[in-house]
Length: 358
Image (cartoon, one colour):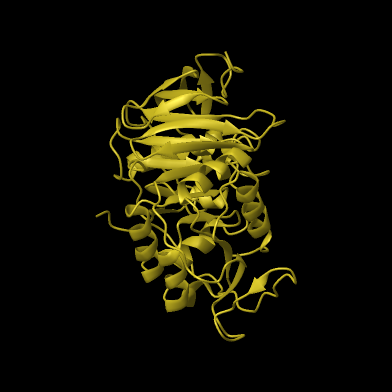
């Protein structure tokens, strides 16, 4: 079993308070205003256990990808679907519940847990019971630091990993994707500051870069670093910096570091055997997923100096492209190579984000 390890952290302020339920949905709060979370449910309040099949969704943020949720709904097989978030509303409930009905694959229920007290919620027995009863679990967007404070070292994390091991579909979007790899840029040191690719390439040990490792365990997230809102927010530079740090910090070797970076309105759907496909939301712009593998250690990855890190293999997948995470090979995508010299990225295609769909 992988060991959870925090490389850097700062004390976070615990968020408290109650969240009011929408009038058309049923609020089933954990008994009192002081409860560490609020639960909203649509559908049956009686548990229904069903036979499920595993799948993992890495979604890139912005507008949700309907096909990804349809895929998870199929795998949840009429059971109880759970959305977890640290901020926001219960809007996913009606969206997922209605989508399942429209497919002719109705779910028994869809629930949203909004975690109000990040520390206490991870040990709350009623929240853990909701995880144990779920036939599908999805983490919404937000701030991955909140999810790490909620999950790290907690009984809730143990329950989540047990359910994944038992074969339920699991996934997330934006921050909910950021927490899915072996290595997580946790945003704890950065707080509300967004990392800029150029700045991080010029100093890969900038104090705002911090990681948490080995949190969530799935069949094929070994050696993986994730990133989201990728091309839209020009995050290639920071992503390559993260991969270099994974190696330089001793978590990976020069040839073992891998990454999954997802553009907005895009999703990678991973089966239990490691086979995967890309689905995108109709009308999306620059929808794609980037599968990355290193072939050597960085030449220069030290504090205060620009990164030099060469021969990084990229496989860019488009809508309908396939990939196998077990063999790290793909079909229907674009293979190219990136190099970083003195903090400047160059590409074998002449473009950092490759070309459009071939």
